[in-house]
Length: 298
Image (cartoon, rainbow, N blue to C red; front, top):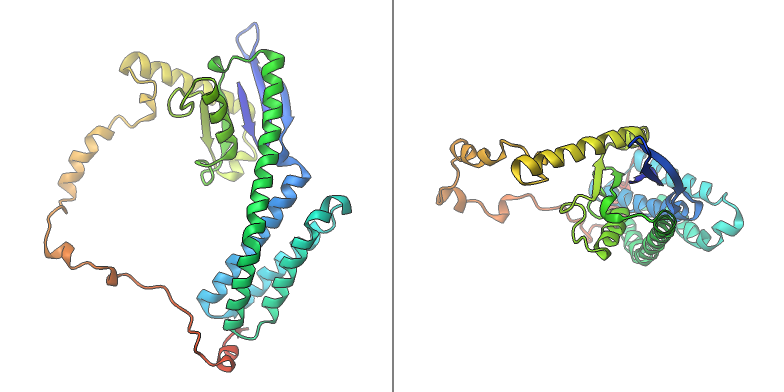
């Protein structure tokens, strides 16, 4: 069994007493400096974008906006304290984000902020795409190196192995670590190793739970998961049956009696797109002077 938890891969094997024991553990690049450096810079750039969007939506530069921008600058300055050899390739990007932050702090009007925002997005889009690609290559290459070594060293048979991936709810669908193992199993003949054969099991948790969950708890979860699969297969002919609500098949008929809203006519015809609120569009024709007078609410 392989567990991916908090940026580490661990390999487990059954011993003579049929219990699982950890035999290897490796850090992935997700815990290394270069990976976290480029992700931190990307996060700061996205954070600044969201702040500017908030300013434009509020049509005011409020105190909390200024505090947030200052926090970004402080974080970027902390990153610059990394050893010169490591930070050198990224120093120009850090400098550019700080420069845009200063421009925003000194802006005199909402129109000026909008123009800065447009320029910022144009410049940062390609940079963030490059960073995203670099982070993905670092992580997946590191995982592949470890897994390839383990498969060779321990003669791992994927068809009799399970992979537990612990993640928060948000990125689960496109999680790159899950994509790696799905691809690995597909190359060995398992087309859908998560929802089909259940060789890959994603365990969703709150971020604070992920930080404290033990590997022993995950192994206990896997044991119960395997028992449920056997029960589902033996009793219902479906290994995934225990993952479904047994009452689910009865819900549609009950809901029809509770929610008889299928009739057609004036009720539905009266609804149109105009019923929905339209997003605010900042007027570009306003006088710059009046725009400036309303910019900051301190």
